[in-house]
Image 1 (cartoon, one colour):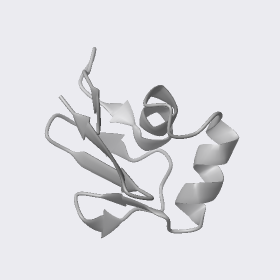
Image 2 (spheres, one colour):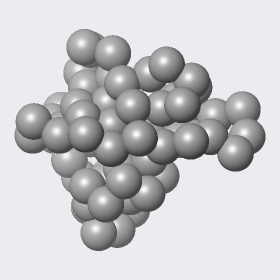
Image 3 (cartoon, rainbow, N blue to C red):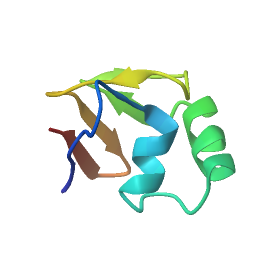
Length: 68
């Protein structure tokens, strides 16, 4: 499980996946999100620009990212 501490009000989903080391690039993030492989708070998320805030939980292939 990875934890990302926010420096501002939010972080975008694609950026969070990259920051956590789940994907190597923004392009990789784009493809896994478009393929419906990423969920936010238990719901499949299709928008790479989805704003994540404190308390959100991202899941991809058994990996969990928590936003703090």
